[in-house]
Amino acid sequence: MTALTRDYFRKYHYRDAESAKTYDDRKFGSPAEARYNRATRRALDNVLRLLQDGSYILDMPCGTGRWTEFVIRKRMSYVGGDISMEMMNVCLQKHETVRKAFDLVQLDATALPFLDKTFDAVLTFKFLSLLPEEIRLDVVREMRRVTRSYLIAQSQHLRTFCPWRTLKLFVSRLFGISWRVKKYERRARLLPLIESAGFRVVGRQSIRRSIRDYLWPFNLEYLAILETEEDPERGGGG
Image (cartoon, rainbow, N blue to C red; front, side, top):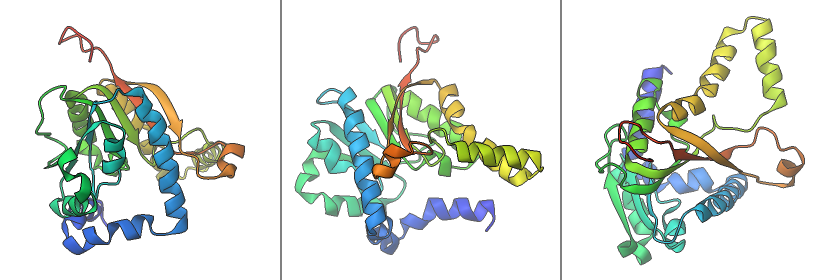
């Protein structure tokens, strides 16, 4: 599958109504995925304690509303944004009982339809590392523009230190396995890219699924808590 085909699939696949309807079962239907979802929820619960009641949250892409009711129950104002109306229609059906408590907006992440510093925090899960590299910085800059305080990000490319992965990278360089070296280097660029857009890391919340993750706390995914840095051109804090 070419890069163009893969990017096309990621952008348009969930605009299909049937794919949207079956998304939750496919992503979270297995026992392992259900445990992973619960672990992520615990991590997000800890992170959201940074924010005050009534904080204004953008969840992008919101998909079928994985975090919609969870954020609302935290006494925060929720806006979900996604390119797929089909996914958001599923979200509306799932959360019909709290429909008046949130808003959904169809959007393109490279040009968000919000004023500067509209939100107290932007949530983004499993998104940034899936974007084509040529637009990734544009998307992060848009997130920086619309949040006045925080970006809370999760990605498969944001992981804690792993000795095994470091060894594999060393061996790949030693034997000239260029494709593997490029893969690891590409993953390592994600956090510096986010920071280059005007964020700084102020915390990490590990996602621990089982006792094994406490005994061997390496290669864990985590929620990165990033705060906006001061923008000299605007003469004030972000």
